[in-house]
Amino acid sequence: MKSLFKVFMVIAGVLLFVNTQAQNTGTNPFVNSTHTYNITKGSIVGTTLAWSVTDGTAGTNFNFVGATDQTSVQVQWLTVGTYTLQVTETRTDVAGGLAGCPTTRNITVNVIANTFDVIAALVTDADACATVVNPVVDVSADGDNSDDTFGTTTRAYTVSMAGGDTGKSWSFDYALTDLSAFNLGDITAVNITGGTATGNNIVVPAGTTEVTISISYSTNKNASGTNGQDPDFDIVLTLTNAKDQLGTPDSDGSNDAATYSVKAIPATTGITTD
Image (cartoon, rainbow, N blue to C red):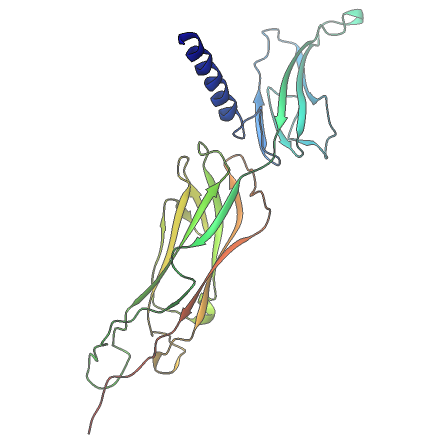
């Protein structure tokens, strides 16, 4: 029984190791990812380096990004398959039949399908009424809406990463459309939880797989509307340029969007009397 248990543990360890290795690493890269490979030269002063891929075709199966004669090289892998990345160091101070006394190193690279995906989703129902505080207090008791508080309408989205390596950071650009056309004006917050925003780009740290983006605005403070009346409108979150820290793009190659349809509440005035 102990022997069987040991065999089981070895098999489980191997499976775990294989699964860990299939996480967009240099030896198991995702399609369209770019990886860096390094060597240290020998101590002989006069040598040259030459990197190559001995299988496949440049531009179809792989691309070198930058120089191929340095101690570091970057390769973008384009198609699924098994390839051999090779580097040869050759002496420049010998000639003739010695042919530079080359040393060659190989590494096997197994390019796998890209499963990295960034997805936008809604937190609540797609169709919902704007928020209103009932009853609305007529602050000046004059039927004027300009200083009344109808409430704060908030909508939240999640942006999640699936199929990628949780040990790597990831990022995306986002846009919230229809906001300028609606002329919200009184946006009180666009909150980002889980990532760091620089403009409309959000970087999410390793170990975090979900970001929340929420927008809040003052209900019925639409400057272009009659008496502050908001219209029905859509808030659309669109994602672009999603990638992991190695530059691996979103696997579906398309923009991802999620839409809220906000139903306006009436901009009823305060009650006046004779």
